[in-house]
Image (spheres, rainbow, N blue to C red):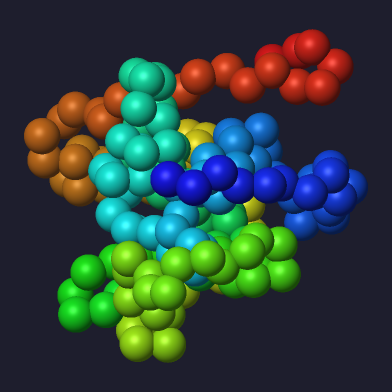
Length: 165
């Protein structure tokens, strides 16, 4: 892998500032993983293995959520060529030198764009859904044939800026 230069202006970038620490970290690690044309394999397992080879706590779900945010921020473009997913960094040529004569991966122009899951720029939250039951007890008993309730998934607390959870 060739060495990459990251310009100091990245520190004051508005689009980078909107990212979480993990999304920003993934973006930097993608920069050093991409070929000379700013392209890379788009499979989540490959991205995880290349960008976080020693981080056991990073999951495929973490990678997918971060990629979605990077796509919605315009920092990553995801596309498919011949049924295989790829990604590219759209501003690559403005910031990096292209030295290779040919890319290791197909061009986004040869494929079909994969839209971001949060295309409306809505934030994704891992919060439990809380619903109130407004039906009567007899309706509840007939609708819930098994009589058991589905437990909520374990949710990790998030530390807020003021130190509370």
